[in-house]
Image (cartoon, rainbow over all chains, first blue to last red; front, top):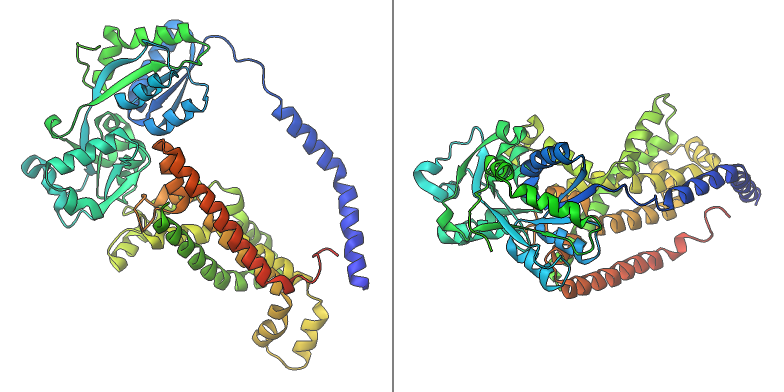
Length: 277
Length: 224
């Protein structure tokens, strides 16, 4: 058939005409795929739970100014970052939002022995849109049972420490069974908070430390869940065993334990107890 | 193995593919045969989801249907809840995300039809609509089959959009890809492995069934 032969010819023509372009693209791909030279010394990569976003940004800015080192920050849920480290992610420091994930890595010999430090305790808050009429001061967590609250965002309790704390607080208030059908799960506290900021959930149980970001502040208000309602959300940090910048990592750990470092954590909603193992 | 998540994902894929075929047929017809000078703009718009990261798409769905947007408020007054965190929300996201996968194969099929056949149908008195259903569509069976298979498969493996707008509710928005993600994050590699293998097997079987069923629609390679 004529038409078919015509198309085949055209196809071949395209193939030839494009070969130059394909060759160039291939060369470019190869050039990009070749690993870049070893990273410059004095560069630290920190993997941190999402609740540390604001606090670590402030700490890193100070640390960089004082030492001249360059610090990269990777944020995620403690569970996800743990999995990444188990599979060889090139992080130097791991800030977990709980002790359990750091201890798990310690048991697997993936962190520098003795480097695990519990340096702060996180707080759980209820975060609602600015125009919400819920009165938590009066009714406590029970205010969440109000029918106007159709969706309550919490971090996924299967792997996010604040999600586990949220479930514990709801159980403590005898609200879990009633409110469970209204729960939606965020991947980490950042996404959980974002569900309220974007107006898709009417309340979120999230981290106090995220309440200091300008966007969060502008969109809503928060109420501190009493600390006795849930097990303490202890923040732990450790140096990753595969790190090639252990000295610099140690320096950063020393920095967060200085008076200045601890003040920054407090400023962003963490408690910094004196006693630590 | 989370069978509930598998059932949900299959349901989402079927609903999305069905809706997309209905939307894509007129769109593809217009793209293939229109002579408007600004056609290229519509083509670019229809292909956008190919280029845009699913996270951007999910973000837009969240914001566009959140209670701070007029569209979101309208939807809420209409249905009583926000679009995010619902099955309908996943369908909207998936339809947007897979749109080009439905339109493009159909456009290619329509353009491959000998225009003389269409002219003949019109000259013999058939209406445009009747020409479409009795000449163009039967000759585009392979394109239609490809469009269905691609949208189904693309939705089945979808992750980013669902992660952004789903809220991970069991039986409602926890699709199979989200379930695997959760299991890996929780460190349950054995469970993640089982689910992934079932996913792999089901994907292959579904695709094989679709391609086998439409075998006759491909009498030859499209370029031969």
